[in-house]
Length: 394
Image (tube, rainbow, N blue to C red; front, top):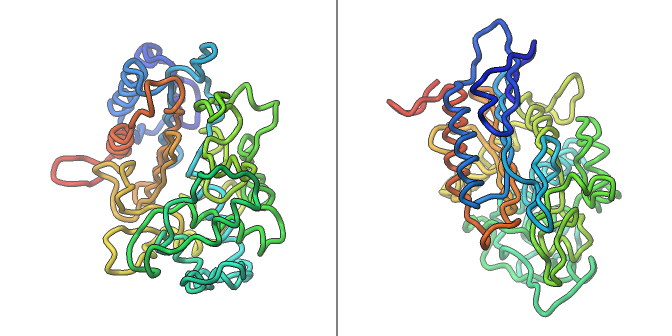
């Protein structure tokens, strides 16, 4: 869907690109560079042709003008289903910044926690071996010293078993010594939200984030009514195709509601969330977060000497910043998800982009799409007006 705010304007060029939707033109010149939008769609068509992806959707927005498109299949097995604009995707680690991070920060705004609190203040069982010194901020910046994830072997199941493994994880090193991306950090944060709010994470996020933003298709543990629209991922260890069931094995074993993964959403819902972030916590008269909270979340919170720069939950400039591309400047921020999802927001240009796919489904092995993220970031920045020659600039 390529549109701005007024009437529909159909073009032959758009019709030639599979899944690209119409352009709604306004009297003002379009602030998005059309040639770059065509390149994005062509890149997606090529990726599907080469079986890097079964299909994908993209969305770029700048100052109220939107361009988006899609191509390929929602499902390839057991039968082929075409991708649709309202397809629901397993967001994987985008859960960290769409559900868990805003929930933590809302509790911070309410004075029910401080980001410099030690985690054990709220989870008293999280002590021993140096765990008692780890703070909420260190969990959110991935500087806690905890390992990337909990073991899956020997097999275990259930929330209690998973939580026991989480709270007894031995830190690799002292907090703030280095950046180490860790799902355990956000597993702890998800439980912390539940304890402090006295409400499960999924219910708190729905009440305070998703419902106020009218993100109607954003949910943990989707019901049967939504499953026909959900893009499946891959088979689980029992050979069952995961459709509407979270792909992440730790989240799946713990019931599907966790701080690091488990959220499902559409590209339209995520655009509403990104728009709220870009507008400093407010959307269409509804305030979700205070402006100063958004600033805190999206500014550098890592230790000053650390090369990898992270905000609270958000990636700023680190080894995970492929979606930033070559042009988005300091001050922009985003995140990725293992299933093939990414989001990047740039306050300087008033723009953001979203890319959603289910890269694990129906492809030959687990395809690497980091190059697509990087290219998507660069082309999105160019579409928003940044140029390569002479350095980044609008």
